[in-house]
Image (tube, rainbow, N blue to C red; front, side, top):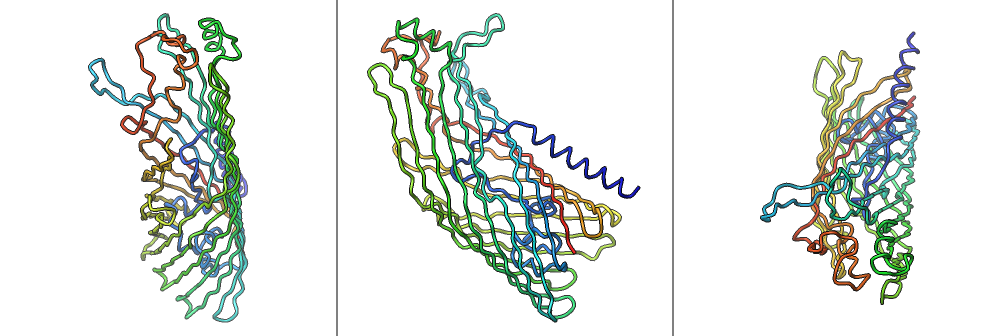
Length: 478
């Protein structure tokens, strides 16, 4: 009967994960810097990713290499499932006929789901007051995956419940991750039965790829209508466009960690990750079909540059209050030196907090909060660089259960949101068919008085995003 109860728990975890994977994906916000992936340890993810001091789960070695000898277990292994769902809504300001602002109108909405996997293991040996251990893990550090689709329709009235005609379909399809494979060495010293000091060193190899594709494809209706209006060959009238990038990232990084258990109630830890410079190589191909008196564009540009991962410092505190029921409180503060990327960036602080409370010492309930900073990078047509800081608050929760004395499952859930301004992904002037016909009137737009002009930073898009995240981990310790 006991095993049957755990079987039901496992089936519930698998059903949740399976349902999430079936959803479609499409996110393109952080194409260059990627979306950071955290929460390899589902327990600490449910506690706001505050895990610099972590003496309970094997994946704590990824957050702080000194956690390896901090743990009481002799060996451990964890396998994690990482699911992220992103919703991206893009708005433009809506004005009335008197040029008065009314509201922000959604013109494109995309929903993304990504799945990744990670694993970690360690072994430790105690020799008197000294404890030494080694471990390793493999996990994604950054995700460049993203899909975006947008339909361009003309301004015909919606009489008779009909949609305006579709002129073109815009797509962005990005793929790739930056993966880390790291080895860890840790040593600890027991001053007494409680007080313990641990040091750890982590060295990892980084390798990944960035595959970006941005396309504009005219609809068959637009091609046929334009050809009829201009009397031209339907196959040589409206130019399709594509911009593709295929880049490879390679490099290494290191991390130093410290963790000290002061007494039964209090512990603190810290890590330092020096700046890492990766090699980014590859090429970018921009293609546009020929039209009217303009020749075909087919420009290949080689990529050979540094890709900088800035250094960061992180401090963490664990407090276990004297309580009838078991309680853990974790607080982390992180300082990221974004200024090492370039002078356009400012250094930032990130904050993480979480608590775990055991109900009747049987069921763990976890809640957490995090506030992190990142940057959106945009390159203008003249080559100038625009960077914008983005603050992302996150609420988390989680729980878990033991299958046996040495095996357990943890679940972590997160919800985050952010709002910022960005440039239009596709310029409106590209759909001005006068450019391709030389005519003084539109062939595809019924209203001849519209002005298809590109929007700049005086009238940017407003982006509202939210993320729903699931972390599931199976841990084995003995």
